Image (cartoon, rainbow, N blue to C red):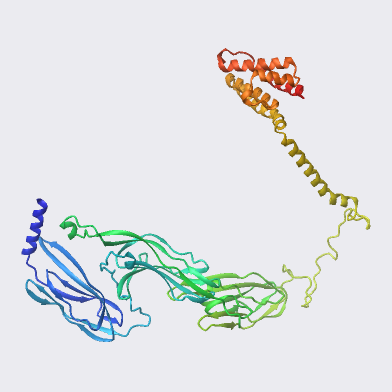
Length: 605
């Protein structure tokens, strides 16, 4: 009842509130390019009916009317506002006027103001399907019949045919007609077969733009932009991109009450798994016709410079030759250039320095190769001109840029310079004596052998030659003998009987050290029974004193030994069932058991 009363009071307040009726029209921009989208908004601060939109013959209507309503209370007075918006784009250049719209409020017809729009020539770089100002996210309410029509991902490339090493621009965008709320999981492709360079984002937040596709305006979020350079020929596939997208959409659930409906209860957040389609790039090999001999794999548009830091030095002083390549393309993948240095120059591998960025127009920058060389002798030398060649995919031809030749004058170095050579047939240097006419003569006793005494053909040589064959034959004989022995399971079991008994006796010895009588007798019992069963091949089910006695007599074991074995087994059984009543020297029992097993082993043999 309280809720119903509050509702009635709310409508009474709305009916008796006296406000000034105001109907206005505004545009997001009044100067636009041909094809550029902009928004026109009509706002009314009262309840109205019979809204009439003016004629828009000079404009394309991409979206609208998109309606929104707001309400506010200020000092006890309530006010409301109804807004209708349209997304428009001009068809041609000129100055146009959007006439006033009209609406009926409380029986009276009121009009909005007119809007003057100036349309200029469209920019070649401008995309007529995008809002170039400060775009608002598309808030039109699509139906829930088919989510794929209202939410999808596109992977786009600027070209589907390219040369190996040519730059390709790839972009991953989300298109939606719902209100975009965020992303839970994004999986970008691996770009297998390409070298990739991502374009860094200038903002931590994803920027939205509007884009028209077949007359439908979508809110667009570009998630990633990259530049790809194919590394092999053939058909290379950019795998689909996947994402979990969270959007706010109309709910199929009915509002619970008027408050739920009034305050936006008809919308809910939903998560959809969407992915783009794969894109195939047809990669063509660089033409062999006209390919320069020193081609370093550069594809794009470049300039080239080579210079030395000094052209007059002393022998053994270093010279730096710097080669700088500047331009746009796969500069990151350019290999060091081949330089023909004089033979008297000591050379080292060049040091490489990159200054490469990914911008709006592609991957560009510079790559520097620093060659360190050291002339070892005086004289006048010449470094041949260096050639840098690259392939221009726009012109579809190779371009070679040569450098000037470098003349180097080398003066004589200091006499004490390290690294000065003793003799150089190409220069007229003074010959330097190193301190001794003859060096590295051995002065100790040297063992000499007759010239005709050779290892090849000797007895030791043939022995070493035959020994691997002899060893292999012995190995085969031993393996066969071992196999024959293992065929007799009874004999194998008998041979292992003593080994198994020793393991049990080791456990008994541990219990002996711990003075644990009960477990000591248990291990002694297991050792004896296990030894007799394995040695005489008696199954466990038939292992008893009578069977043991008969089997030992068959093996010609003495009666005294048999009686000693039976007495030991009786003591172990007695100790197992009445451990408190057992007394005696455990060490002596252990030694007697070892001697007993040894005695049985000898008598059976």
